[in-house]
Structures are given as structure tokens and as C-alpha cells.
Amino acid sequence: MEIKQVLDMVITLEGRLGYQYLLLSLLLLAAWEEGSGQVQYSVAEESKHGTFVGRIAQDLGLELAELVPRLFRVASKGHGDLLEVNLQNGILFVNSRIDREELCGRSAECSIHLEVIVDRPLQVFHVEVEVKDINDNAPVFRLKEQRVLIYESRLPDSMFPLEGASDADVGSNSLLTYKLSSSEYFALDVKTNSDDNTQIGLVLRKSLDREEAPEHNLLLTATDEGKPELTGTVQLLVTVLDVNDNAPIFEQTEYEVRIFENSGNGTIVIRLNASDRDEGVNGEISYSFNSLVPTMVRDRFRIDPNTGEIVTKGNLDFEKLNLYKIRVDATDKGHPPMAGHCTVLLKVLDKNDNVPQIALTSLSLPIREDAQLGTVIALISVSDLDFGANGQVTCSLTPHVPFKLVSTFKNYYSLVLDSALDRESVSDYALVVTARDAGSPSLSATASVSVEVADVNDNAPAFAQPEYTVFVKENNPPGCHIFTVSARDADAQENALVSYSLVERRVGERALSSYRGGELVVLAAEAAEGVLRGGPAQDRPHGLQPQSSTLSGSW
Image (cartoon, rainbow, N blue to C red):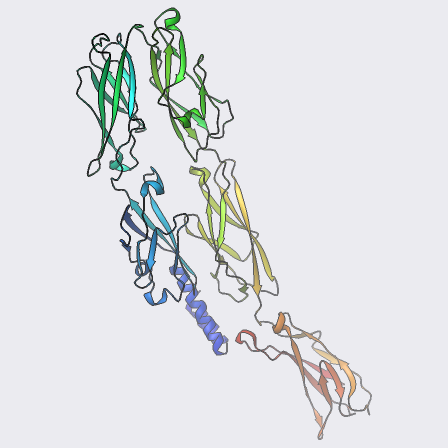
């Protein structure tokens, strides 16, 4: 709104309350325009209680003296009281233990979104606090001991898969290097594929002799790249087996497949094929999941031991887990049996199976019909659990109304006044906020908002016609009813109450007539002309002057 327009409004309104109201509206408009920015801080996880994060009040342009009177408050969806603000000095500090791994898991980015709200006028600020990772988690192997079965007939350079360690940290703190204890028979092979998926294996350097050494005990150490370095270890127990000199071999050591979430039970994932150079029962192959495959994978997939076909047997939910690493063994039926190994990397693809969610907060209703453009009516936030385009949500408003949605931050909107209101034309609006994602087909959700328009005294009373002609007999006694007129006011409640008064001529010292509630009464039995004036009730709602209208009558 232009400054000149605001000054014009001040000039046209009378009374002290009118000036105060316009001044407050001007401050609300200016404050709202300033309240749409974003402030960013960072804090290390596991910081102590009271650790300084930032001067939030100063950075948001708020005075310390106004924090309490304006009901300064901080909201963080789902993050409880991890961070707090000292209202005495406006400092944001750590209030309780922040565990980045608990907060964001393995996500490369981790932040706490704060919504800062103050009243009088209503303002909302968005603050992002990045949680930085520290090296507080050592590498961990799932099993304390890994058993590896190797036939004595296996040739040097044969490789046997091992389960690597995991590190709950991120970045360089989670990058692992492996080291094998000294052995003349074994070496360690570490490979990283295009998906940064590390495969480790035990490589046979020298032919084994079961009769000479039936078992080998090794120690595998994983070290992260954090500072200081943290390590984890696992015992490797290698058992050397006799007989059967050919193990089944898969066509590939690693397979990558994709499947949509919510695929039906029994959906085929992949059909594996391994071959064995042996003959007879030594060449007959049975497929199974490796003993290292966790229960979570076994609950969702099964493998046909004869065909090597992997199918689903449980619901796959992209939002919960989108990558499965399945180790498969192909074991022959020799005595003792030999096994070949491969890994199936199964990626779950997202489907648009989550409807957007809408949350309405801070409703400021009803709204006065003379409210300024840009007045905030409600705060709206939307969310969608899906990924990518399926989780991108846009908001729209229907039907065509004098309101609009203004985006204040990602997935945050304000419902504001877009054009002038007239309660006498429309006294309330039924709005529908629609949140629609970008999936195909897209999913949407709606929320209804009822906006009531509050009346102001902006309409004068109106008579049915501007002039009335009434024929009256002379010599009527005083108090005799002559004629009834009526005026209507388009405003509501006290603004629509009408009172009447009469401006008339006099003949000599005698009054010609009086006015009682819209009825014209004779006071003297003589002809004359008079002017009728009607007006509203004498209370002055919202500090505005009453409106009036006049009509002329002759008799």
C-alpha cells in the first residue's frame, strides 16, 4: 500500500480510535513484509546444555523488550525441546541432547527447522539449524564372528565375500578402511562400486591343505576417517573343507534390479542362474539366502531353491527402506557341498502412494470488511511423505475469492487478503485449499476455511423514495397520524439501527407536525411543507460517525 493512500485514509477518518486502528494496520503490514526471511545457524551434535547457537532475536530484527509482550515462541515439528530461546537476551541455545544419527539417520544433510511466531502483529520466521556430525560412532560389525568355509581344492586368487562394518556417522566420519591380520594364506580385497557400495572379500593367496591346517583364525579391523579415528573388529574363522573341487559359479558376482514399492505378493524380482562343472550330484545346485542375510530381508523375499527365482512375500515401502542387499548362495549336492556366491542389489522405486497433508494454524477471524490488502488470515503448511516429484506439493485456492496464497518458505503458505471486501455484497466466504503433488497420477488433499466478514458502518440509511406527497385535511386535531415513512440500512447489527428526526417549517409560533418512529403526526391543522431526516442509532461502532439521509415531503 502506498504511503499516500495510508495518509488519505487517516485524513478521511475521524476520532482517536480511527487513527489508532490505521496506525496498527500500517505496522502490521510493514511487520509482515519483514517477517518472511530465513536465518540459518549450525551446531555440533552432542553439544552440552546451554551451548550458544545464535542471537536469534537480533538476527530476526526483534527488540528484546518486545519478546514477552508479543508472545515470542518457537515451534519445531517433531523435535521437541532440543533448542530453546532465552527471552531475556534473545539467544538460541541447546536445551537437550542432540543426536544427529537419531535425528536424521544416514542422511547427508541434517537440520532442525524452527518456526518462530510473534503476535501483535502476527509474524512468522523460519530458522534452519544445521546439525553437524562428530565422530562419535565406531565402526560396528553385525556379527562378532564370521565363519568362512573353503574347500582345500580351491585355487589361489579365489575370493570369498565378507560382511563389512557399518558406521552411523556421515561424511568422512563414516568412510571405512579395512585391514586384515597378517596371514600367509589370505589377503583382503576391497572394491567400491558406482553406488559407493563397498564389497570386501577374503582372497586366497596360497593353496590350502586341510590335513595340515583345518582352521585359520583371522582378525578383520575397520577404521573410520574421523578425528580421532575409531575402530571395530570381527573374528574370521576359516574352516578348510575336503573333497568336491568345483563350486557353482554365477554369471555375475553382482546383480542390480529395480522394483516398485507396493508390488503384489509373489512378484518376481530376478531369476538367478549358476553353473557347476562337476557331474552328477556334485553338479546339482540348490539356491538359498546366505546366512549373513538379515531377518528383515527374509521377511520380505523368498528364493526358490530349484530355480533361483527371488519373489516378494511382504510389502515393500520406499519411505521406510529403498535398498536391499541380498547375498545368495548356490550350493551343490556333493559331499561335502560347495557354494558359489553373488549379491543382488535391489532398489525400491517410489510410487505416488501418499496423499499430501495440510495443516492450518493461527486463524485470524473474522476479518473486517475494511481490512488492508495483505492482511494475514491463516498460516498453512503442507507435506508429502513421497520422494522426488511424488513428494513435491503445490497449493491452490478455490473458488475465485478476494484472497490468495503467498509462499513464505518451502511448503509453507500464508492466506492473505488480495482485494477489497464488502460485507453487504458477500458476508462470508467458503474457501477450499488444495494441496496437490507432482506425481503421475497426482494425489491431492483439501482443507476448508470459512472466512466471516465483520461489518463496519459504511452505508447510509436509504428511504424507499426521495420525496413523498401527502394530502391532509385541515383542522385535524393535534396528535393525528398523517403518514408513515421507513428507511433501511444495508449494514448489520448496531450499524443498521435507524432513528428519525423532522426538520419542518413553522407558521407563526406553532409547530406543524412531529415525528414518532417514522409516523408523521399533526400538531397544527394548517398546510405546510416539511423535510424529513432519518438517521441510525446514536452509538458509534468502531469510532465511525453515524450515516444519515433525507427526504422531502409536502402536504
